[in-house]
Amino acid sequence: MGHNKTPAAMPEITLASRGMVDGPSGPKPTKRLSRRNIMIYGILIVVSLYYLVPLYVMIVTSLKGMPEIRLGNIFAPPVEITFEPWVKAWAEACTGLNCDGLSRGFWNSVRITIPSVLASIAIASVNGYALANWRFKGADIFFTILIFGAFIPYQVMLYPIVIMLREIGLYGTLWGLVIVHTIFGMPILTLLFRNYFTSLPEELFKAARVDGAGFWGIYFRIMLPMSLPIFVVAMILQVTGIWNDFLFGVVYTKPEVYPMTVQLNNIVNSTQGVKEYNVNMAATLLTGLVPLAIYFVSGKLFVRGIAAGAVKG
Amino acid sequence: MAASRPNQLFRNMAAKIAAIPMIVTALVVFVGGTLWTVAYSFTKSRLLPKWDLVGLDQYERLWGTRRWLVSIENLFIYGVCMLVLSLVIGFILAALLDQKIRYESAFRTILLYPFALSFIVTGLVWQWILNPEFGVQNIVRSLGFESFTFDPLYNAKIAIYGILIAGLWQGSGLIMVLMLAGLRGIDQEIWKASRVDGIPAWKTYVFIIIPMMRPVFVTTLVIIASGIVKVYDLVVAQTSGGPGIATEMPAKYVYDYMFGGQNLGQGFAASTMMLLAVAVVIIPWAMLEFGGRKRGT
Image (tube, rainbow over the protein chains, first blue to last red):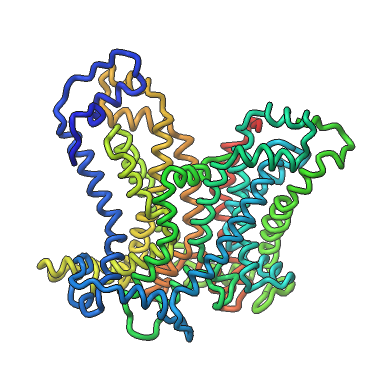
């Protein structure tokens, strides 16, 4: 690591002097490779490598041929790079009788994720707005129930929802799953939006009221344009969450509309046929690609989303 | 804000209409669904739910089933290890990242990325890495340690720790982020004061910083705990509950009996037990957190 003579590389001094921008903090000029620094960076690098190993193993395995996998070790880089496993995972891998690869699951997931994300954000943002700015009697009670609902194990509500969906004829369909995702996304998203809208200056709301704007007018003309960042955070949260869902997918859909995670599990853990580890890893990587891409692109916003999800209301 | 005068049912009508999805979800799905499941756990429903009360029969059978007992034991081992280890690892990593180091965001990005991946992906990758024929065991053996054995997914005695390794890899980044946020919330004057007094850094952490971060720890604990009870996909992907029933989990028991075994009553009883377990954690926390003081919004 090429950490040069920045004072920031000296934790002992900077820790003490943080927040003392104005005062004469006067750190001693220090050796850049103090023992302490070596230890901190050493541990972090080793831990980081450990965290990266699975990603690395996935990538190298997916680029090897089966003979090479049988002979070699899983950490060795591929001698002969082949994209065959990727093609096979995408277009030919079998689940049961269907052999059209993971592409079907991918498109199912796309068709599930987009409406679920839009519906859950639309509903939750309006809920949060009503809770923040138009509080009515009893609103807080429903909100409290909603938040506690987030802690109830899904298993408790699985079957009643099966019955409800069956009643309205959506059990086993893609749209049924969309409704389920909208329902279970509601607690966290409502909390997110409520907290955000509450933090906006109230004068804005009052001024708009004085000007005669109504519930929807204020929502669309003032709240929405002012809250784009929080909408992005909510979107990141929902896209990754819904894409990664397995339980709801397997409970509420049928094999033709299985989302990608369910299909992936069926491909890899199928008991028939010879195990093709390279195809399995390519399929696994393909499934992980969407949330990974979102994660690496969104960076801080992703962290903000999960932090918002973690912080109590 | 609209002053709430009495007998104004139609005041705020738009807001009330807009809140209907929330009200329906809260009352019908969350409260209604939960009560329904609890109620039907006292029936002998099999293929379809049937209102045929049998008292506590399902629970007696549940606690007499070996698979359920193994599931509970697994959940306990996994839960305790996960709680302790992810808190320890998360806190240490956060403390290291909080030393004003360079490349902090790079390290953070690497440590958190597994959290973006699903449990299915996590389980499948670790299934591959822990594969004794090709994975870690094989590598160490080929280095000359012929008798080295590390096959957590094939050895019933330690299989649950194989799941734990994967769970920690996926989840500890989140704890690290929460802890880091907590550490950043500590007043820097504290550090200054302890430096002036010549207290070593580790002592400052243990006796001053950690007690100050109590609320963060409590919240984190609740998050980890409620996540642990739900563990399902990870086990399905990594071991499918095997070898034998060595890595079964309560959530999997529920699913298998409800949708595979056509024994709804067992599924309802098992899920009610899960609810009870969560309530034991959540209710004291909620009373601690929200009880006593009135919170404004």
